[in-house]
Image (cartoon, rainbow, N blue to C red):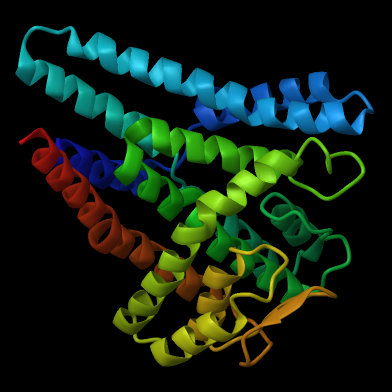
Length: 323
């Protein structure tokens, strides 16, 4: 149902903004992460071909299990004779479960934790807080590179933890959102080009690249509109988005990162990897709070101008096909 899908996303966003994420022991994404870790251990055997083959199952097994559980839950709810209560229960479960795939408040808290440590001149704690949200080595980063890493992670996670799940929920419902988050989790855990994971992580990394291709670019463009609404330099946001979006090793991560750098008029730098933007390289505390505001506005805009139109279009196509 059109209204049900829109309500699910809308109320999930509200829940997330108010309550944030539950503790790991209550969070499905944490459960999935633990399960992926267990599978990865079983698949690690030293054989390149077997590990590459195993890498496929590291993705397919948790995706299949989550889809079976979600379809089973939907089937059980559909068995309720009263249509009104069936829709109400389905919507409530949908809101709760979809909320588990997004992390607006969680990302805000991570960014603020780094910022708080910086403001207290506790660089050691700031590096530790940053290490929780980035893959890079944070041990020797100075203040500016710590803040740069925080903003880069925040912009990249707008896709991974907000707009990506919205996009795939709009297309495929809860199974789509959970499948996306599972692939994203696999990539964050084993999608490294290291000796340990280069074979096991190849499939998850490539799936993540494919799934993020459209959402990352749509998110970057949505950030341009968000920058305009918040009074930032939206023209520079768009220009840097176009110019620097391809500079990162990832084929997708650079687009929201470049858009944020352009909107804030700053430069993001990962030492010996890339430099995004052409503004002042010094990053202030205000730029972090501005970035958080832009993340929230982008999330709401993406819901309104991307997710809802997709839901309406799919519903229209279904009506035409049924007719």
